Amino acid sequence: MENPTSNKLMDMPINKYLSHFKSHQRLIVTLSACLVVIFIYVWYCSYGFWTKWPTHTEFYDSLATGFANGSLALEEEVDPSLLSLTNPYNPKERRGMEFPMDYSLYKGKYYLYFGPVPALPLVILKFFGLGKIGDQYLVFALVSGLFIFQSLLIMSIWKRFFQAVPFWILPLCIIFAGLIAPLPRLLTDGRVYETAIAGGQCFFLAGVYFLITTLGERNRSAWRFIAAGSFWALAIGSRITQVLPIGFMTLMLTFFTLRTYIQTKSLSKAMYPFAMVGLPLALGLVVLGWYNWARFGNFFETGFSYALTTPNLQKYQDVLISPLYVLPNTYNYLAAPPKVNDVFPFLQSIRGRGNLLFPFIELPKVYYTRSMTGILYSTPFVVFAGISMLSALFLKKRAEESLERSDDDSYILKWLLFSLLGSFLIAFTLAVSFFWVEIRYFTDFTPSLVLLSIVGFWLGYRFLTRWPLILKIFTTAGISLMFISVISSNLLLFSNQASVYQVLFPELWNLLSNISSRLISFIQP
Image (cartoon, rainbow, N blue to C red; front, side, top):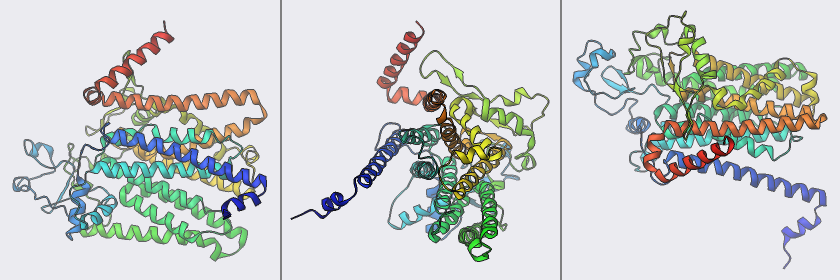
């Protein structure tokens, strides 16, 4: 009996057959790159045990248990001695008492100020009888989702705008984006904080992906627009600060709507994307507002004001976000150097010292920094984001010449660059204005910056094709900076977890130390 599949392939023109084969080959290579990164994620989450994952916090499990039992509060009982204090939010009055750190205490009950969305899938699992589920599993799922949607965006942008850039660069960009700081650090920490942040970025990138893959197409997909708005609602429901970059994205969508109306003179056609995205987003905001009102009697209160934390948040509530922190924190997040050691893993994050560089700024006592390394040291490839920024803000003719398709595609690319740039700047500004400085906050702005960097690298590559020698130097520099970024990010992680890895994997640690020492002695005899 004849094979109908083979007959179809035989009847297919040779060029079409080769194109079909090449597309499958590319898909396999791309999926392999993604699987390699996910494989490494599992190793990091499990600390090398693979099947046994350490539990750090179980906050979202507690919230899901409350939801499953019809309560918005957590089920943990509040210690009466805590309620008897004049001001239970004052750390001095709580001294010597046991209490759950970072719970919100309000009218005798515990709540979470973290976004509730990550708890929703756990509620379903609770109905199937599953027991305690640590936050580390949610972190893994959400960081993996962040990486997947970021990879889908990278592939979509390359396919639509940059196919002149060699395909072999694409999987390298995907691996780079998945293994740089702070994503591996989120996986090893795996707590409630990392869950909320990873959820915010995962759903934000998902919304951007569904929007950009249908925006500008002739046959616009309603479900993709609805998915974009829905994912953005989930992003805000995971991390409330996502309302600012998503608000900027919505503003950019408004500009796109106005352009469409000017071109078509059809109000219904112009408003279609805005309405499809806006409706689920607005509904999500209403539900989140109700959730806050039902708990605290205020649509805008997440519970952060009532959190039981190390600093007295109520005392310093006027300076938790302040322009006073912008200069020292900009230094901390961008240019704080690591400590360089002569033994493996060589690089070590140290406490941010941005405040020491600006002694004329009197910072409030609540200001606090933890060990960190500036992104220019941990991920130097981000310098290519400058090309994207210049292309979006200044370069017009040159940027259009680098594209191979229609004027509409040129506009869509510029629209995307402006959207990512605005989202990055808003998230970065919020991070550097906050009183608490942490490595995990890099996640709020790094994904947008990484996408800008990759697109900038591709724009530079496409522009330099007319000068082969310069192109080779440029490409070599870009790939080298990708490699350095991945190595630097992971060496910093090994340094942070050195005490753990040395105990768990002494043979591996000694092997890496010996190999690195020999490489150094070879390079510097």
